[in-house]
Length: 145
Image (cartoon, rainbow, N blue to C red; front, side, top):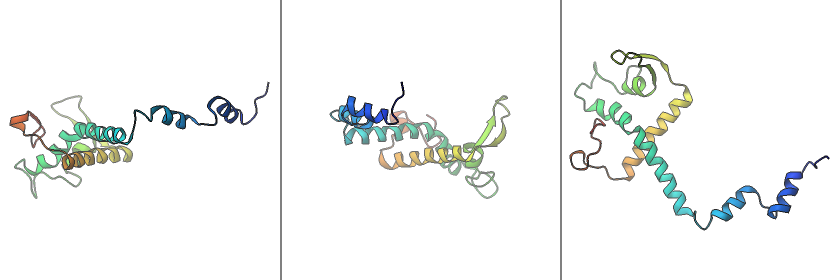
């Protein structure tokens, strides 16, 4: 038996009264999922991403600046030898933990995702209160307890 070309559309109208899947989901979740829930969900996702990128971002920016060795001939944040390029955008072979070897750069897409992760750290720092390390047992300037 041959199905008509618009079988899905006919089936949708017969079974669901013309509604598509997204309309059905919106109608069934509307009482429990409102704009405040969407905002809270998005904020929590950004916070989770920020938490995972916090240590790396702080170590390679503020950690370099306040590490006591920042300057013209020493540690750098930007540039080919900078901490962001080496530690955030580089791929490392840690087979020998005492002597890790940088093998390559990340692909462009992965670099974009790293930058978005670091942006989530900046966003979170701008929208929430920082905790005090010795009082609240959270991260300090070098990202460690």
